Amino acid sequence: MSNELSRRYMGSKSLVEAIVRQSDNKYWHKSSLVWETYNGSNIVQYGIDLTEAPAGSNLYYADFPTEVTNNTRVQLLCFEVQGAAFATTDLDFPVGDSRILTWVGSLADDYSPSGSFTDLQKVRLNIGDTDDGNYLFIDAEINSFIEDADDDTFLASSYALRALAADAAKIAIIASEGDHKRDVRSVARELSRAADRFAAVSSDKSAWGIALADRPISTVEDIDY
Image (tube, rainbow, N blue to C red; front, side, top):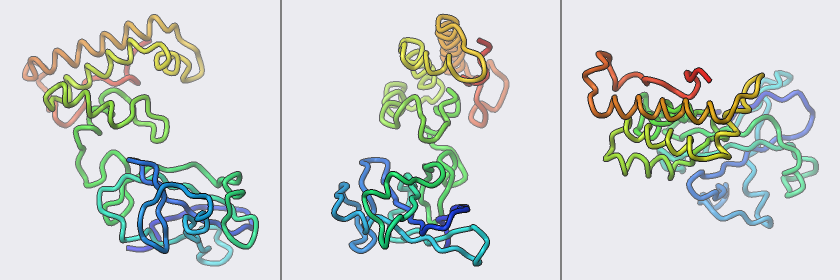
């Protein structure tokens, strides 16, 4: 594989892509080929040069480092280079949105890196927490729900929704999404009802009469606030 890193860019500056490992926020050092804690003096080693191809296309590419271990979840950050080389001051000139993907020999979407969902991804899908970079729960929190539920993703989804219903800050985020603000109390009630539905699925999956392993019963997006 090649050209896994790609950006569309209409400007005239040089571009670099920095790769950050999500598990510990360490940066990929392109010369040492290792992850390291951010060090401003090594900033030039964090920038992988993107090249426009073909010329005039406004499409820029670079190869992802194949030395990165498979199933590593990474955040990709693109920056304009204002001077001769990537510098700390260039961090003030991001290009496009950051992207969170999983390296599996290619860059795959966070929710199906190998064609099937992990338990963590199933829970995220069930509760509607699928906005990369703006998750309501970090991975460790979701994995804790899964562990407490003895790997039952429906029960873990119920735990997650109950946690959302009890978290005023997270409810405020959900209530403010979209074109119209919603009453936080009604959001909390609907989250609790959705949690009850997932708990019921966990206790008696056959009662639903559908392929439960393949589809969610309800998500935050499905809730009628």
